[in-house]
Length: 581
Image (cartoon, rainbow, N blue to C red; front, side, top):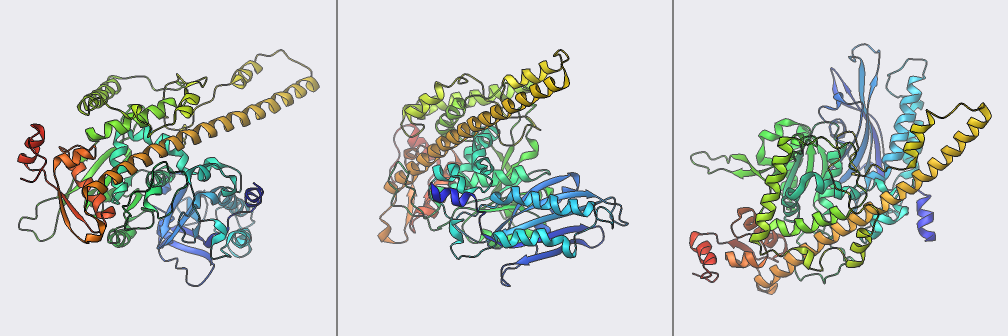
């Protein structure tokens, strides 16, 4: 643990560039200032990534993005100014780029980068030349010190880009110089699943199949950027070449063609269309978010789009998922695409029941500030519950609750025995944060309320009493934060373990349906009965494509096509098919 303490006191040294970008009403996006670890680092286009469309509507934001092989993050500020020609405010972003690694972690620098931006902009407001100006000259001294302290010095980054196992990723303080492990976006997985509901498994299949995924949102973009990372983390362990020491199943003989996880592009703009075309040809897949609504009219650039603007906790409406479907060419040589709405397949019910059970075991979620029920809310929930119930009956009533692939019994009992185990789980409303944390109700809430009605005391006595109350409140706040963080970590680990077990099951079962890898490239036709062996729905076109995606990545050269003709489906229904016809 001594090593972890030493690392915790020293910030990670994995930054290769720091820059400042701003928007001018007549000149557009500009790169005002930058420092680079070497001349090989290219900063072309970062001024567009750091200032996505629509940020002029918000006061501040955190934008995660990527530039070539580098992941980056920037702090956006809209600052008031009286300078002529600026329309009353300046749009500025202070950002960094990280060195390439197996798992870049730009979120570890957000807290310090936010403090740096505040220091620089605050000094400008106090400058004699007036408030709202851009930094120049000695104004960049704090940024130079920041860069010198965190710049790359070793080829191995001092371990900053390594990854070993999820328990270490979510627990070790040496990854977070400020000691705040809650900055890890993976801890938002429970909140992410509550928002998407069963449709999150449609996204899960697209990530495992290394498809192209786009999230459409409105500013601010920080939440959507975090959700991109969370979604990629659902399959990160299986998509990397690193062996996990905590896997409960042996790794199947299928090895993916790619050695890294799906590419997390972060926030993209129309300026990045050429980047999307390049990434689409790599076969690695990508996930990104955007505020440009024009992408809704360009489905040829992605396979799945998630519309976060349709999400409303007050009406219990979930984000909309749409597939990009290629239309028959007809007389046109240029392929055309259209969007088709999709939710989830019946084969997802068994896995979702287990994930939902873990979310329900996540104790302590308060029912305060819940939006009042409405007819639309009740109707939608009834529809979703009926779909899940019917699908559960169709799958034979078997759920993950009867298997050992999910939450261990000892850990489940720890959840059940908690004081708030019966509390209901809800989607947090707007303004309550994106982290999905519960609102802790403690005695300090009543102490604040009763303080207003307390009898008048002498100043010295009242000051001593307030000091004691503040000490108690601070101690209680620390205990509450520790409990919340621990519960989030346990829930996230249980969810990741469940998804990991399902992935291992699919790959292990797929290995029995494919020929030996030594036979080279072969064409395999799977019947609906084979799809059923994977516990997928033979009636679902999405599940059929998902099997083909898995074989494309993990089939060691085998090409798979799923037969879905009427004879095959009727043969399955009447137990007459399954073999070659």
